[in-house]
Length: 311
Image (cartoon, rainbow, N blue to C red; front, side, top):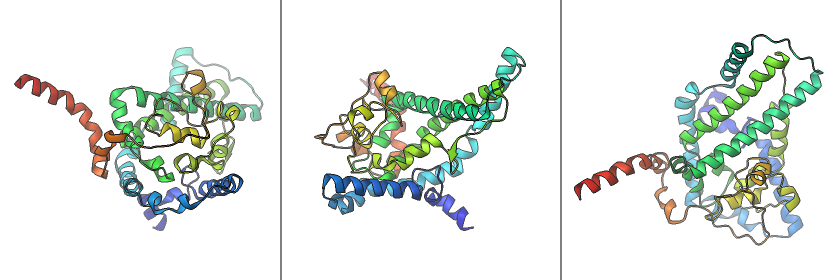
């Protein structure tokens, strides 16, 4: 009963290693943060400021998190395509296209490593592609603006995402993971396994432990530029959240994709961060506006047409 209640309130995120708010990831981020401030001798007053944690934007994040948790559990998850269904479809398609093939024999440890790495790389690449589309396609940007409307960043800001965007990213992962799994089963058989830590892909787990939650925080934690050309640092993602930074640093974990496709910007020590959408973000002041305002994109053309017809 208690676990079920936590699930419906979204509080199971604190004990689920699949979630960003898992207590272990929060603890590791806090330790990295403290070490960072000790080494740089910066003031930690900002971290405990009411202006941060009780900012109107942060308070909106807290309420929005619980509302959208109920929406996802009650309306979205029962209808979402799963990795299992996508992998079965892929396997059947491969068999119909190429017929039955004898399985390729590979040492199990290499098979597991290859599967884990392929899943990580293609998932991260597809995440980059969809994220970039969310910024470049006007009707997708109308929904992604919900996330970028945050005026302060806390770990809860990660969940300021419109349900439609949740659907798209959920479908993205199901299709990519299902495709990879189906192809691997077709080629190597069903004896697949991931290299995981507490049920999480090893590479993703390492990323979470190494300060993933600092990406949505006031801690401008940078990597050396040579590292930021391979991995997205918290400071790089924070710059992406600034008023002027929405055209760079789309990557999730790897910055390789940004470097390949010309959207990489390494962080600079003197960077100044002003988050949000400027005046455009003033339409997102309540949970109702966060949920409903993006749909105005589809209504606006009809309003313009109606106005012109009267003229």
